[in-house]
Length: 377
Image (cartoon, rainbow, N blue to C red; front, top):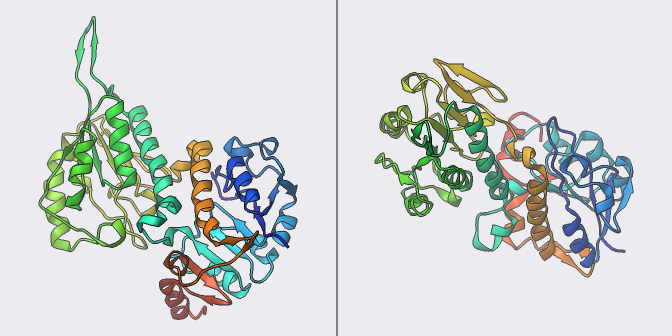
């Protein structure tokens, strides 16, 4: 019997992405999988049912009951998990560091769950890296948000009324989101500077035509992320950055440490040094904010400076974000589909390190420890 892969309509507030694109659905079918989907699963992403050829559209309950593998953007609902057969597989962005009732439900239902946030950052897994693909969308949209909120043009303009100087933009964090933000700000004509505590990113920043800000603080970490700074390092970083931030018209912050609150980089005193009309777009908003004044999902004004705290920016570009995410999931699944069925290689670090729950156990260490400490295991 062939493998059945299912998708459900996403239910989280503001979530418009879909875990499966028509192109990827066809490729999975080519691998011998049967595809089932909840009616309207891709509509919010601009992917109507009519674009999915050979996909069977069913009710949500039927999709859960028939799926051997359930692909998801975010966490499936409690009803969806309850409707899955024991031994079924769930793959998506499952927020594994939040050890809560959702993780316990997966464990109790004997679901094998893969959290795509945990896929190791190794060369052969780059095509599976959902965090990177979605961060690219967020970095792009962050600059567009900032440009819209700014009371200046980003590019230099020469007009009959005179020449208008280009705005200055600073991007803090040179990961995927930061580099995409730098590239987008450059395309829009701003004078761009970039900063990251990982000194190895200097070449990447400068290759995009931006100036690298050197504060003297270096914090290379594991897996391509920056490590958490010490209190002394953080103070030195903030002091060196404050002058650059104060002179910038647009600041985009993208700093994050997996499983921890967003690093605090900009304090209220620094915001008060910025010119009225300046804008901060804080991509760390959902993790508590890189700026002291950030409020997730809101735009705060302080001394004439706007601090934008966007949430789930990729959902605003749902069509392309869905296509990229869907390809990441395909690249994750393809190596473990053999003759139309699933064959997980637990010796492969990609799957061994990204598994959250399996066979009635929590396999991700931090989540397991948190549940045990809370008496949940």
